[in-house]
Length: 83
Image 1 (cartoon, one colour):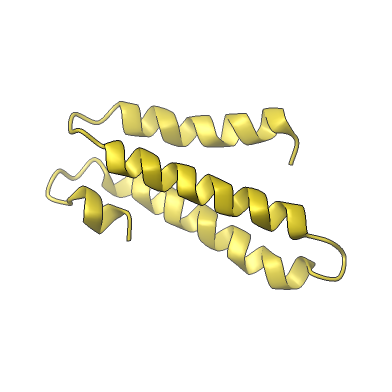
Image 2 (cartoon, rainbow, N blue to C red; image 1 turned 60 degrees about the vertical axis):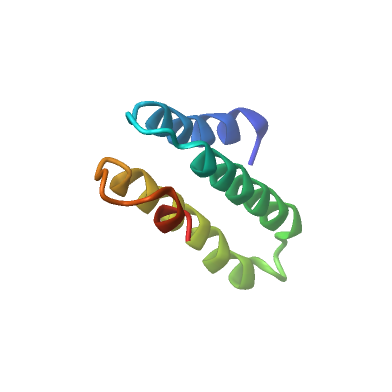
């Protein structure tokens, strides 16, 4: 993933976190942790490891997408959202 694509991908999650009313510092930390995991996975991807790493990449994407979807519900704590 080139740097511009990565920045666009991450910015959509940052924007969503910035739009919520509550203090979501721990979720920004969670986002940073997931982005680092994604970077590490993408560095290790090759023809030989593609099918092993792809489900992990999709898992990171799913966790971040779900986080963005449920942050609008104020009854969820930061800890519950970053599990």
